[in-house]
Image (cartoon, rainbow, N blue to C red; front, side, top):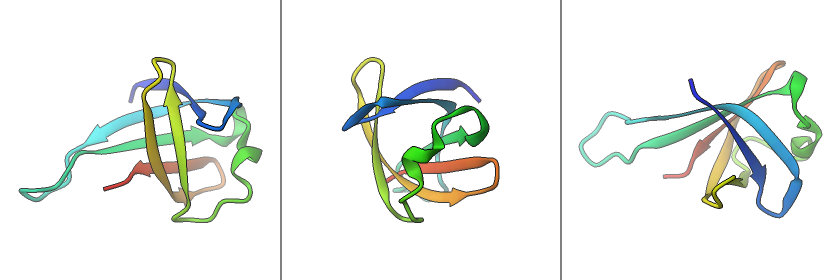
Length: 85
């Protein structure tokens, strides 16, 4: 999985490096989905402590492209987001 650096749109002080990939869900009309997985041990995970599953965060890449993503899972080691449909 490629590693990318993104920051939170309204909080550029929170920058994250994580695994980012896109997959094509099954179905004729399904849109590709992006996944962003953040390793808690090496990132400022406190930025997400008030979030619950289903909450959205807008991440921005170094090139300025933004993407709204949903918090879908939090494990002891990772925080996992996917793009909205």
